[in-house]
Length: 118
Length: 276
Image (cartoon, rainbow over all chains, first blue to last red; front, side, top):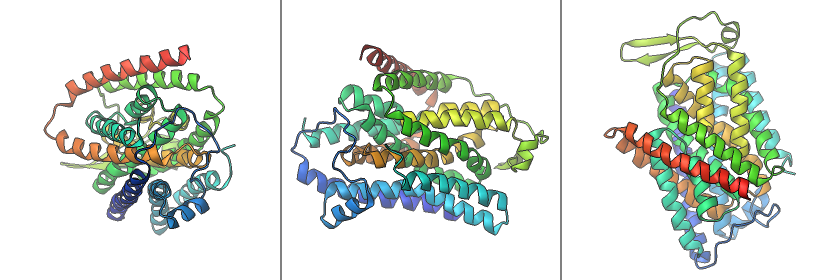
């Protein structure tokens, strides 16, 4: 189990970074010459933060969308680690920790689904 | 400046952050946020979003090794993650309602604290007194492999550690950092977990905690792909390079130098916050 977990993390990071890299190259080719201005944070800026818009952007070969996909994969990596731990605890019949693991997953899921961002 | 130049500057900065971070144990967010805000004029909310992504990257990148060696205590990690994930989400949500200047000052304060913690002598407070009720109920006591066999250890003051972790989580969600220093305080000092176990377990936890707040940032649009991309690529490459050098280097002198740089950055952030 330890072995799977260790490899899972490594693969997750590698995969997500590859996607980010590809997206980055596409993005720079398209936008490299434009001016960079991040001086003001605009909350509802038209960007790629819902799964639908990311997917649409990928189909469009939009660099930024592909980068976002890579980021999503990266965020998912530690979450998959928790899922694996829950499975492992279940096999060990450690139900207390199956519960704790599920609690953590639902906390994250809650934040994922709900528009807590205000 | 052009986006290309902007990207390259971040890549370089993130590389340094990852490099020094892996050599000294202090997280990359410590350099990345000041770099983005002070040098490149990026709004702190974007900087926080980018930094949290780098925390996940470095945590997952290096956690892989520790889990393999069986030192990480997954139960301690997950138990404490209840505290850290809830508080991280809280911190992340609240962040936009707080004046960015206050965030700057708080960030500077945590930076100073982290620099001080990094320089402190590491004293191992652990023992094998397994009488703690909560520790036993939650099966937190354990052992780790050493050259001479399994070394058992016991966990103390579970409630105190849990609370401190909640503080660390809020800091992480609010500032986009890994809160390594606070976590060490919780695990080493309060819960008296052996050093090796606390660092590896904390690394394991950092990724999950960061993922929890990252989700909030994502929804809010704080994670901009243009910034996050060079940040995570740079940090990961830097961290890999750092781990290769680590074997041959003397981290002690580097830590002093780094502490100096961090202190300077911290004071700068605080000054900016007060002035702004």
